[in-house]
Amino acid sequence: MNPNKNILSSDVEIKGSLKFSNDLIIDGRIEGEVTSDGSLTVGENALVIGEIRTKSVIVFGKVQGNITVTERCELKANAIQEGDIVAGTMSIEEGASFSGKSSVGKNALARKDAAPAPPGTSSGSKPSAVPAPVAPPAATHTTV
View 1: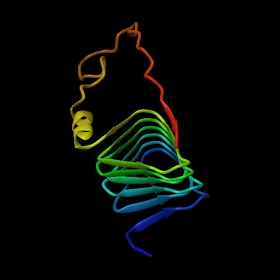
View 2: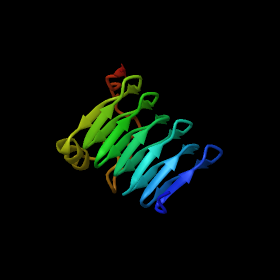
View 3: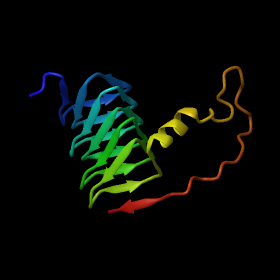
View 4: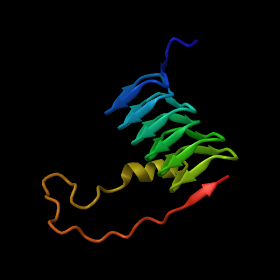
């Protein structure tokens, strides 16, 4: 076994932000942001509710939240992804379920980094008392 690979087994539940180095395998439940310069594997018993921001991710289980990876995102046969994906490269196996938008390639990562902050979130400004109406994003659902 690789000494730099960490494992959170199926009986582990975490609420809050999770940061790690190197590689991590999650087979439990995480509620919160997962951030790393390393690689993440979401095991077949895992449920991640929140944002994932890593170098790469392989999903066997379920993710409810957006995924942003600088390299590769893989959705395996029984994976369920409910949220948007921004990745350098992406693969979706037959049988995986993906509901969200995807942006793939170096240009997608550059656009994500250069995207302006949402209205009302810049420093020094206060959110409007009456929020502007926002059209719901176009929903897509793909089962391969």
